[in-house]
Image 1 (cartoon, rainbow, N blue to C red):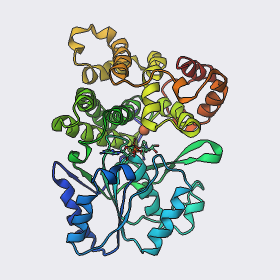
Image 2 (image 1 turned 135 degrees about the horizontal axis):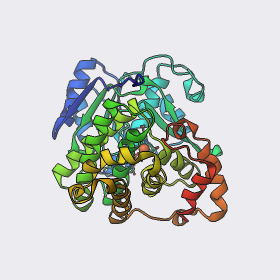
Image 3 (image 1 turned 120 degrees about the horizontal axis):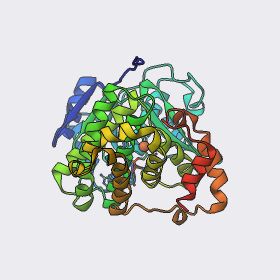
Image 4 (image 1 turned 180 degrees about the vertical axis):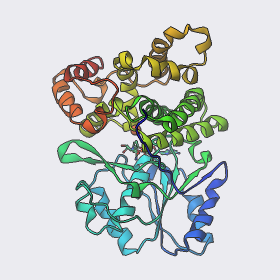
Length: 385
Ligand SMILES: NC(=O)c1ccc[n+]([C@@H]2O[C@H](COP(=O)([O-])OP(=O)(O)OC[C@H]3O[C@@H](n4cnc5c(N)ncnc54)[C@H](O)[C@@H]3O)[C@@H](O)[C@H]2O)c1
Ligand SMILES: [Fe+2]
């Protein structure tokens, strides 16, 4: 018997080259005069906020432009922006950036409507009121943050990254205009793209997986695996960029109805204490965790194989699960993903710390198809040193 599930969507999605201009439609539709455009230094210096600012101005609105959101922000960065947005009486936030910027926009959108929330983000039930509207323009492909109910922040004194979850944080509008991703450098294309692959593949094998999730996950896997190397080799390959952006969005939708599992769980302490970027730590872990899960996932890996492997037809079906894991190892190599944690300052004496902290991420580990013991977790980290 199938258990119940639900799926949540952003209210409106604009897609295709040129859809960035729909910012004008959004400002019209919302009938607001106080708009904040949020971005970060990297995105701003590439000129990617220029178009959005001019579209807002064409509607007779002078936006508050904030362009210094930190990469993988800490929870303490929220206060500064909250004060600015509250003072400006912000009615609409337009986020142009990767997961760091979109997550910041999402959390600010609920802080503005839930008084005092800024200091109390982790208190269960603290987010009670609907947010001010958010329009997300993802410039990486990516976290899928434009589709999800999560926002992730670092709590530095605890060396911890924490995911805050509320349905009110699902963006109202999403603009999928792949032209804004053409300039994403190869290393970021690779690591953020593998993050999206993790979302799709982990959601597929999660114990919360369901038919809706599987449909989206298989298409996301097909799009990402068929295009990530093309986008990595040539960032101006428009078809590959479009496919990556769509795959990443679908993978984000998977998360709203299923969940990531052990790859993301083991990734959290690597981000929290060693500040390894989210996409990079997931990419390093992905083949190892999927290998560790193999015994519980032969059926799922067999289902995924034809969407992941271009040569599946040449491989006997009973060998598809092994071929999937081999493909993941080979893909990380071709994308020049590091295969050791040592270059990030992680050493053997850190194994117990990492294991204990990953084991605490029960929110995700309990959804992993295989129950991973502390020994299993330690074994995975050990292979990366
Ligand atoms: N909310 C969610 O569902 C969710 C899911 C996964 C990860 N996350 C979080 O998202 C954050 C990571 O986001 P990310 O991987 O998208 O990276 P990011 O937003 O941190 O951006 C990484 C770097 O890429 C640059 N950049 C972004 N787009 C660019 C472009 N088009 N051209 C040139 N440079 C560009 C940025 O300036 C930045 O320096 C982490 O904090 C992670 O925990 C959130
Ligand atoms: Fe992720």
